[in-house]
Image 1 (tube, rainbow, N blue to C red):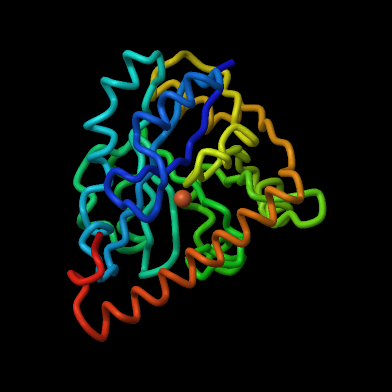
Image 2 (spheres, rainbow, N blue to C red):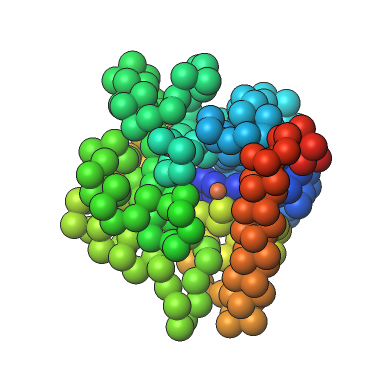
Length: 253
Ligand SMILES: [Fe+2]
């Protein structure tokens, strides 16, 4: 079985989104015994900030050889905010991303590229960029899998409704970290019964040949991550507001 994380971020294209470089992420994955990871930088077509509108697959292209030397298979992927604020993760698509803005655009991609895998990241988390029940069910046909995210504790677990929807619609439930900082990594991941190449891994996920591996965060770490995401969220709202009033360039790093 391959140890895989399908959802991670770095500071390469968007310094405020990830704390660590792609090399640091790959090195940590090697240290933790992973076989494959997907670095899924954000692509937000409606963002006023240029860094979120650049090609998110640049990180994959620039670091796949470094990963290969480290023995880690890098899976091409990105996290796109559709129809302004609905996040979806797309794996194994290497074409032009700049025309992707709506759920329909992704449906067209799936028709043309059979190897693409689309999953719903943290659909029941409370941020406005999460899909929520209504959109997830409306678009359920688009999704090959649903995410079980690392961010939960024994007291609070917003993955539970995602688990129920996955069961109801017979979708594989994949464990991911959505790492922005490395202390989020290696608590939740996926074991995949597959050969170590991207197409085989994608096919195995679609066929449900996976095992979700997960453990709840300690309450202390859970509260710390929640506190940090509230601070980061507030900073994002402030920067967006200032960028709208003044100029986005003034607030790019
Ligand atoms: Fe993410």
